[in-house]
Image (cartoon, rainbow, N blue to C red; front, side, top):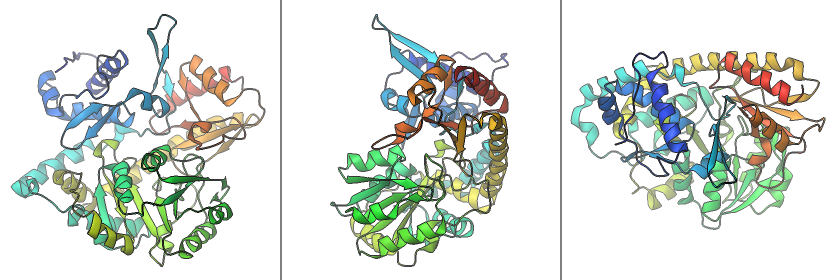
Length: 465
């Protein structure tokens, strides 16, 4: 076990001390890829602190992409090259002497972060204790491969109530995040499946399909989402869409385009739509739009959701709702796969749903993120002569589109980095091509107003706004 020294007298929270220590160890190569971290219990005992403090540090590390939780094995350091493309707040550059010059960002406008300061830690701890006291040894037995029926019922009720999703609990499969569920789905689809994906796209889904050697057709987007005519002209039989909040452009697909998409799927027997209900909980203009699945009358929509943004990425829990035809395939070809989520965690989440904590927490976070969203937009009001602000009706990030061509997209990112600010280029999310105008993503969920002000003030200088 590596040893961490924490200062109990410091004003800096101990979870942050642990977080910074591990980040530095990863940066310096002392914790290489696939290194196993001590368990929360072991580290808490070693440092004589609460396990919850350690969990908070690990949750932050996982949310930023430094480490990953592997079921029944623990936490491991992730591959650094992949992190740099996504959400790491660090920049690693090779110097002329072959060493590494490492820069830590002053402000990271990550579109992937969430505000863990409001994580329901105390409530979660109480539910953990109650779960162990009430259920005893039963939860240590093998569970249903799809996930425990109680949790699937709670998720079914929530999805119907909040998103209009129509399904039975047997159509729901619980898994350790969307990556696992996407990989499971590839076992159910025909081997010759061809996937139409939004372009730009959610890159993790693209990587999964690409790694399984699926033919992928990048589909252009207009102001309503995936264009239908190019989809019809393609040979695709699976359309991957994020209609509630397209990532990364933030487009909310209107009902008419959703119906056109469904009609495309209805024309062929083997066509399906995979709806990733990304950021559906966070909408700031008008009423929430029901899920695309709620409009489906012929069993053509596969619905995918996760608790990572709503509660915490450390939970590593997602759910997939299969149409009845694919559920029959699942029973024949994949029902022998054991669930990847512990039954203890499933029971805690079930109680979190059943006792109303999830929706109360969601309402609270919606208010917190709305306040941050509104502050950011008001602060950017003076930028409107230089930029067009897009994607601000939902989600946890906005886009800044520069049409004056003073700087290229790469130059905008580079000049921000010179000031210690991390922004995210839109072109990084294109499967093919790039954005017409230089465009960057600004996430705000894990930043305070003071941090946003600091970052924007520096960007104004570097971008000459």
